[in-house]
Image 1 (cartoon, rainbow, N blue to C red):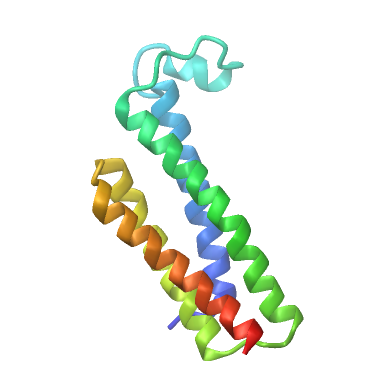
Image 2 (image 1 turned 90 degrees about the horizontal axis):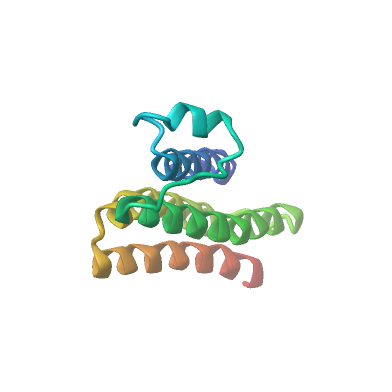
Length: 132
């Protein structure tokens, strides 16, 4: 099992990857004119494809959840409450988020929600380690 600090770093990397993927799909980086849009101000963005829309929503969801995750991991460390429960919660969060991303991109609705709930459970485990 990885430490919560390692998970924090990996979650930041995962967030960066989701944002880059979202941006690349939105600007259609590998199509004609995509490189110009990538290096430009992106004033002339084409309408997003369904995949680009899902990638954007998945990236925004990751950023929103990362903010809560960082706060919880920091609180655990500031309060000197690091524990196996908090570490397990961090691991559940990360692996759930890693599974959530391709599931969201593939457009699988109910499974995506169950995976998201697992990541929330991971954060709840970290929060519980702070309280008990």
